Length: 357
Image 1 (tube, one colour):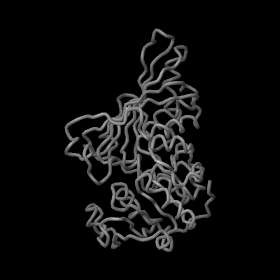
Image 2 (tube, rainbow, N blue to C red):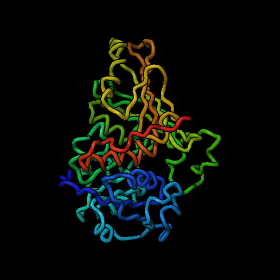
Image 3 (cartoon, helix red, strand yellow):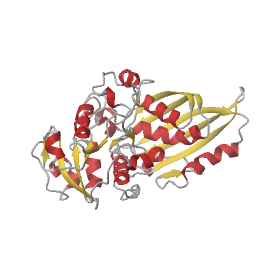
Image 4 (cartoon, one colour):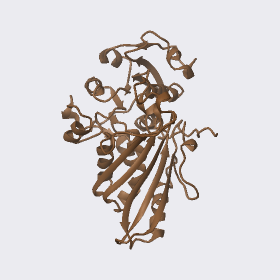
């Protein structure tokens, strides 16, 4: 893992992939961040356009225009680069910034996994920088906040991976996850990116539900890796993602079995015990998580349902979670890592609640 010297204040931050939805969400936070100076906006499209010609909501926040610059040109104007490019595209570009001595927060999946075989299986591609796998700090503060603060190279988590890991992490740490964990996770259309294609374009999914990549989604090994690191033994994830008629949001339902001898009261104490001091995580007691309660915010809602005894000496537990895929599941969590890298409170500027209704 790369050790980091203190970053300057203000910190010059360039955003690579500035025209995508992740880029828009990064800039929504960074352009108003008092410890950050957004220095360059990089993309392969909309070259020469002002930012507010691409992202209407960011009008009057900067005079910067979209540029197509080399990493060497960007590095001359940046202390830290946020890279919001697709996996398989990101790896070589991120590597160049690392070699130039620039701190990087990478929002792609290219450096989240330590196991090359898992990457090649689930991303269906050869990795162009396999020697760097395992050298990036995984950017989930609930797992790694001290390490993130000392890192120059952060791999920011995936959206499904964030929602499912946060739901299950306390049970992994309590040594209650063994064998199969089954998950159904529904997601909004913004997770498919700004460029519409058949099957992800919102008009084609606005009034339907559709499963996709059953058991093969690329976040499966990421989640399994997280749970193993947090104490789960021989855990296997069976995950079915569902395309939902939403713009933003993820709702997960996670099923696993525990020994019938474990008291219900003990199970009910696990989530509050893990998250009572986490300002961005709400453990619900009297209702179940809803996307509307967290969309547009960094907050995560989590709740536990406990079944009656099964006939085989086990009891079924169901953990539900909801978050905004672009914020806590994406760019907002990257900003959380940037705050840690700057020596700030990780929640600085990130506590704005969701709109209601």
